[in-house]
Image (cartoon, rainbow, N blue to C red):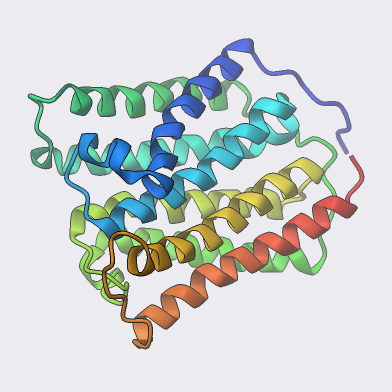
Length: 269
């Protein structure tokens, strides 16, 4: 069992600082969409705007944990997650490249912002691939929960890529294939995180994944409510089976996140 905490290259910290600065714009889609929404690389409707803001807020949690802890005890989780997210989003953007207007500077920035971290963090992940887990501890029944979560999220993420219209047919708002494949990054990233921690998570990995899931689950549910009861004033079909499943699914993600936080708080450092 490894107990030391291998130190990361300073370049990793610099990269995550850059990512954090970019995420500030993403999070604003949830709390102040008028600031960034009109400047987004493609047109966003209210539901998508708030939803993406919640997703970026969950990402911000993982990035901040990485910056504060600043060693392999948490980067073992967050570097693979970051590479997964940026790779899927970049791939989906390239597949739907005709949706982008390259006369706008923000579109060029979008591809740069996603391509460079994919390459840089992918290189670091390869360099650190042989580093052992830091103080891994058995999780008991929680391991099974995380493996189930990884399987469900991973399968749904793949379905959103392969059959996007079918996979998102139950969502509270209409999703086109482009957005479904962009959103698949969220589920693939969650699957990678759950699978890594299931192998024996330490305190920091449990807290990072836990808080990310709590912010994600509660954030997207709150985003849905904001769309109806906030300035957007759009009707949400709360009573439909699809919306109930959607809300329950993200509520379950938040619940598992709470369990991870509780376990992490009890875990020895």
